Image (cartoon, rainbow, N blue to C red; front, side, top):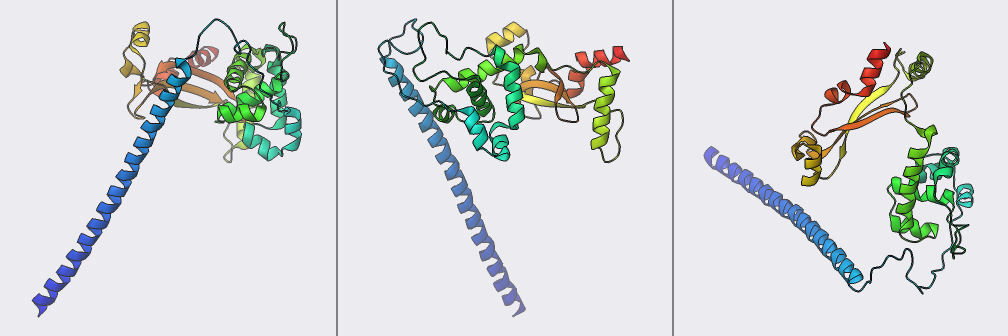
Length: 292
């Protein structure tokens, strides 16, 4: 009887284990079926985009003409009033949308506006049909792109053509590069460094002293370098591959102050470079050692 009970118990256990095995197999099949469906959808989307591009460009006649085709009708658009938008939004909502507060937005605009392209108010070919695109609108579109917004949605919201958000983004990037007030410079005087150290100390729970910057490294992802890129740089593509991240990229080193403002950035070494070596060969290390 004891042996029979043992056999019956083993049989129940085996049935339970087999049932669990079948359930796991079903779950495994469902997961892989979902993955296959996502892959198929991805391929279908890519094929659809390629087909749409072929259809779009097949009958297009290319010329040196800039802007709309001759005789094209003007699309009526209403430009977004950024000042009105700013007043209508709460501080929290504004910061979530633009990744900065309202005062920072207008200060940044004041710094870069002289380097932004013309609004179109005084163009030689006559007035802009739907009105000029203000510098504030340019900055608004650029920040929304930087925050991950969709260019088509941004264009629709701002009342501009579909290509204007990306044009505005690069215009703002160029304007920032040309604004000396926004240059990233590590402080060279002891007075500036002591001020930064005091800010770190005030934020520290353990009174960290003499900290003049928080440094870290990050891998900036890139596509695999082409053969022509490697020939120009005289190094192979493997130098850009980070074995730990399993990505191609560039090693970026950066230092920020206690208010998380960048003080120094260096991004001249490929992704296989260690953080130690990248900083050891950096201009900042040489500057600190020479300054004493």
